[in-house]
Length: 327
Image (cartoon, rainbow, N blue to C red; front, side):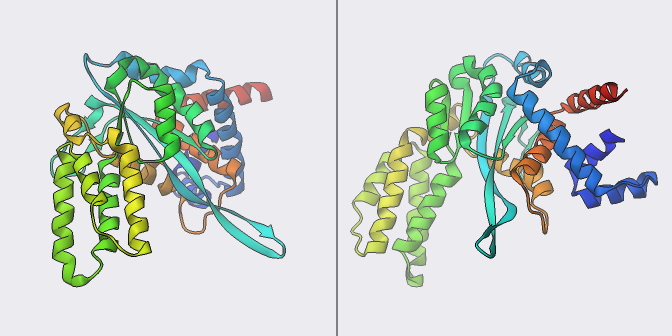
């Protein structure tokens, strides 16, 4: 019964999970009990993840041992905002949002190109953390370290967040580090909307964007930077937009060799981590009316990650240990 309550609790909100149990099995379930169990076992999983118990890293080793010659392993990470419980400021209750960070690691052969349909990934390892990025990277390193010896065949694709770039540079300097192409192109779109602001210039704006996109795809980010630098821009808003995109591109140009990456057969977009946010975290943790504490949010995320990592057997082990203690 604990197994059933925990599985339902990571799959759907507590009330919905109890309703499904009662509907399908005719067993009365209590949502407050489901909540307590999820927090209890989710916290135990957190402790074991930090202590690197054998059962935690076994799944990672299975993926590593099955790598083919010259195969690439992708590592992606990003954060999404989740609603948290309100806190009082004087007499007023203030709601807030906090970032849940998520990592996704998968092998090249598990990424299936389905043509016109969205691509699919058969198997991944996920890592989550509801808190500081240093605590998250400590967890992520447990997985990524298994593939460090791949050197340039360990491929990171992420946005321009400074903490991600520093983490990769400090711990995996030999890995391939790619700036997500869609983040790079989004900067062009945002910049052009400010510079080509009048509707009568829409065609000119679109042509300018297309020209820069072609350059980016051809490893000519330096030419894009030079063109933006040489634009005759007046007005504080426009100049600020110019400074912003130049700072972003100059800081990341070593990660923007998209032709080189594609010639190696690599992905250049972080779509897999964006989609992972939706089905790993948001599907369960961003439902209408939900507000999370740090402890409760991390506990449910741990259960969900262990399920999706095909490590649910570890949850069963914890249940059995508690059962033996009670006996």
